[in-house]
Every structure is written in structure tokens, then in C-alpha cells.
Length: 223
Image (cartoon, rainbow, N blue to C red; front, side, top):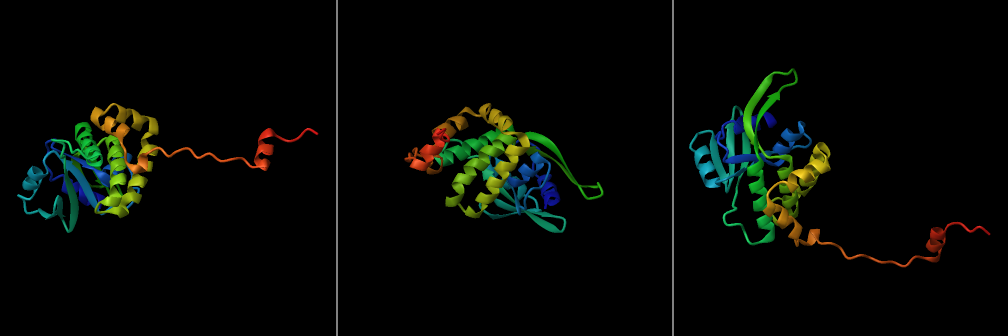
């Protein structure tokens, strides 16, 4: 799937109006495929403009919404094209955080020369792809994980968690935190003010120690 995805992305415009995100971007940033995936995800500065440009060719067709099919050799690759949707920013806290995370992914994208080789080392696919930074991928995955239960694919929460763990281990938690801290101020502010039930601080729970526990805390008797 990765080779076909890279071939399909090579047909995207070479300008910086889109960025690769999602599982395929995680694989490429980490340099290894860590789980199965059936599609590729992108963010476009203008979803409508990018879809118009791609579907003007016979190798692309819109399925529904922002999903397209790219016909590559003897197969088909599904690619989701998400709209930046940051002007104006949504008022809802979750949608606003998602828009800011997408904006940071576009802002911090770097063009990467992606080369896919077969088992004997022969090049089977190659493309220069604008790739989201690790920090922006962590931000997107975090917001997506919270939104999943109310979205179209609640079953993908597990893959979001898997990717977050792999990104944290691969880049190092401190590196990821520093990158996010140096990014979009609006995204950081939304993160600090988030009032989603899943991230609210739980009240402290106080319990009384049993006589046996109090005895253990004091240590053994010297009698």
C-alpha cells in the first residue's frame, strides 16, 4: 500500500497548498510501517481547489465529500483531502482545536524525498511530498482521538493511540513537547483551555487508612 500511496501522491501538485498527515505520514516520519492502513490523509489549504485540480485528470475520482480514489497501475488508493477551514476559526472548542492543528501541519510541513524500495533494494516508488512535522502529527492525533467517538470512524481511536505512542517513543517526549511549544500560539492556547470531559482534572479521592496500613507506614515494632 505504501508504494501505491507514494505513487499517487506524486501526482498531487508540487506547490505547498497541501500536506500529508495521518498514518502514512507517521510511517514516513518514523521510517517504519507499524500498523496496517487502508488510505492516506492530507490537509489542503483549499479542499475545493485541490479536488478540482486532481479530478481534472482521468486518474482521480471523487467518492464522497473530500475522499478521492487515485488509480495507480493495477490498484486504487483512497486519499482523504481535509479542508483547512480556519477562516474564520470555528467557535466550538473541538472544531477550533482541529482547525488549528491542521493549520500548524500546513505551516510546519517540509518537502521530503520519499523513496520506497523492494526487498532487494530496487526503487519501486519515489516522490517529493510535503510532510507534516512530528509535533503537528501529535497534535492532530490527540485532537482526532477526542473527536473520534462522535465522528464517522470511532473504531480508529486505537490506531490514534498507537501512533501517539510510536511518535513519542520515536522522537522523544521532550522533543515533541518543545516542537509543539514553538508552534502556533492559538493551538497552544486552545490546548490549555480545553474543557473536554476527557481531559478535565479529576477531583482528588481521599480514603482512610486501615489500622493495618497505619501500622505498616509506621514501620515494624521495636518491642
